[in-house]
Length: 414
Image (cartoon, rainbow, N blue to C red; front, top):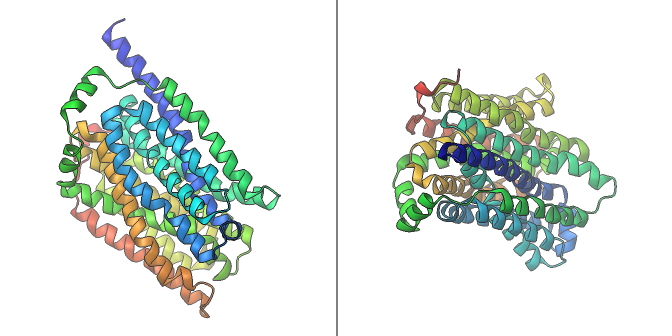
């Protein structure tokens, strides 16, 4: 068999493995967003207050951010075959632990969910770089996040009616844990091993060197901050706090609140591949990010000041579409750093992105979330909370102006 045919065969296997990784990423996001519908049940199970449950659920992002660095270096050192299996398997264990009536075990389970999930997106990006051409990489990354957000939406608008119709929250977590086994084993079997050249090169590269290269590049920090600031209105607000905000501040019933919150994630399903395609199409990254930021701000302003112009479900959906630009910095960090640290670069990007989430989440909870049951000016409270996210997007715009343009106009997709 010729080297060319071997390369083509490997590319096909990497694309199949990438497809299996999308299942892993779907489960990751479903388990990330579903707890927002189970706050009361989880509080009773762990014998803690609702506020403590929200804090416990938020610990997901601590291990997610830290293990993103570990995931990146594992991908560069050992390839995706064993790294993706380990991540998916750890996520499954974390899901199963979440049903035990112990706050400590529940916390451990949530931390394991974050740790295992940290391998999903960097692994999918790593597999995509092996299976797809550079001209379509941003599109593939966008489609990857599209599947993740579809899982996030399913974790709300699919799980909510299932719970309402009698499915116990423990049955959900048991099912999620068992489902993790399927893609884990399949990826272990199908994913090609790292090439001899890659293994030899990884042996010569220390564990610290990729991080020294990436963290010494200011554009790495800027791309991580931009992505983090554009993620948090969805990860912290839509996926965690939106349901109680819609119920208690705006008076929505439980079903309407869950569906409305899920529309942001559903918008990402369209927005991620669309924005990825557009940035690949024009060969530039920054203009599309800026357009997305402006669109996000307009939708949030419409939600709080001109809510009668558009149904909140549509507003959150369009907001989610524009939010798809949060994935473009993942292309920027890869293009701004050498190819041989591509796995670590994606891991660092995830670390920075969700490091922002870990930093901002308790701040928002203290300023607005924990006061949701005691404030008297419900509408004013909701408006102030939305302005919190608008300010974050304005900061992202400033950072986007400062980051280096890494797109190549010669790589137009015609």
